[in-house]
Length: 282
Image (cartoon, rainbow, N blue to C red; front, side, top):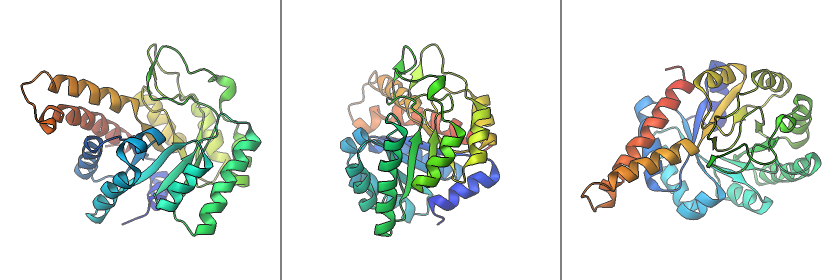
């Protein structure tokens, strides 16, 4: 099976994007796996610090490893990790990728911390891809009344700083701020800055990752992929679909969890299927 790095190169060459979906339990994993197999597409499963504390990092890894052994192109990412210690733990575990998120820190501190974990991975001979964020877009996967505090046009990633950041840290993937925000804003998410994506893509050699995909329009997604985005994160949309599906399931007379939660799985599959088809021009 191809590595995640090889699939990212494939995505860049074909002007498509790999879907990244978060889970916190086996139902989420089931939904992602079944749609990925149905469409025969690579996907990345993300577990944030809170999510992996709930499901268990080794448990999530076991689910993904089993799927890989069965021939599925499913990869595991330690999503938004806010301490160097926890990034190193993900590297030691042998995950496919990990995100160090110091985006709300000063530029030099972000560089220093990110370079430390990149150097650590290299010293270990690790194949774990290191991703970092440059430009703050918030930190929660929720439905929001307003834009997250601290997010504005001024926090969008500067292309020259992006070039310097990648060069000084040696990261494998870059997550920029280009009008995207974590969570879904009730009044509507901002439009993406497609021109900024193009400018950053022209300045850096590594794949670009779009975080905060929930709530973004289909047209913005298409333009972002054309401009240089190679992976897109979806979480809040999945959480909403899962919750709504479970609420429907609980209205039934079923008492077996796998039965009353089945509608939650199906609702998640609908979101995943729609997004993967869009990201891959299907």
